Length: 316
Ligand code: NAD
Ligand code: UDP
Image: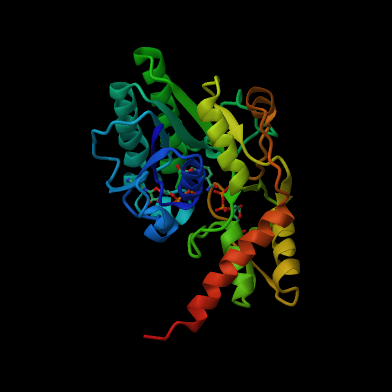
């Protein structure tokens, strides 16, 4: 199969490409390298089954493909808030362009949506039937509302034009190749611990998240794409941790002598988040298999290699 992965040079996209290439598909990676990097897909550049296209999805494009995994969009708050109007454009125009492409070539398209469509949820855990509690005018809205309108577009292309869509609501995912400086909690804590700095906990650390290791997530995406269910389907690990628990776990694993520094909680930071994965379990036969301790260990190893290289690099 010829498969397009938008955002393929990013964190999740590059792990997905590794799986698709291992399954002998022809893969076309489309990316503008805003937060993605060529080194994430370097090993495939010389493969005859792999093509790389530098392109911004807010511009239309004509390609011939059988499936589209549409992941292109900055995912971490500091990156999607850097240029919020661009983030909204990526979510609307970018998704519209990819749905238009899917319609033209009759490709199946999977939209990488997010648990952020539930906002600061007032039901817990979050099932797909819940419509969410999203601030439409806050600093997270460009992303949260962007993904909500992306889902709306996907369902309207499905109803109006028979486009085969799949919608994944991805919960916090972590693993090797996250950017050192992307501000997300797992990468922040691991990098801080490896650099012998205090861990920065925002608020009192009682807010919760549920962390899914990237290989589990990729498995869920592939099952969703090739299964019979349109979605939306939650993909995430239902093991819920407070941010303080996560900080202590990282400290224990990397350097128990370090301290925790409390900083102000960002605006509209969701209080609690845990996926109800009943649908994924029954429709896709999917559930995460990598426990936090194990996934963190692999993540720490990856960051350790990068932080050590950085420490050895000559100062300019
Ligand atoms: P990432 O930032 O590592 O990857 C996004 C990729 O999209 C990058 O390679 C970036 O360069 C590319 N990109 C951004 N804007 C683009 C544009 N205009 N045109 C072309 N390419 C563009 O993020 P990620 O964590 O790998 O997330 C991938 C997808 O999964 C995103 O859609 C994100 O919203 C979704 N998601 C991620 C998480 C998570 O925890 N990582 C959670 C929920 C949803
Ligand atoms: N967080 C934190 N310290 C950090 C980075 C993040 O305490 O250095 C908190 C953040 O306020 C949020 C949680 O960790 O409550 C998850 O943040 P992240 O940006 O990783 O994901 P999101 O908020 O988008 O789920």
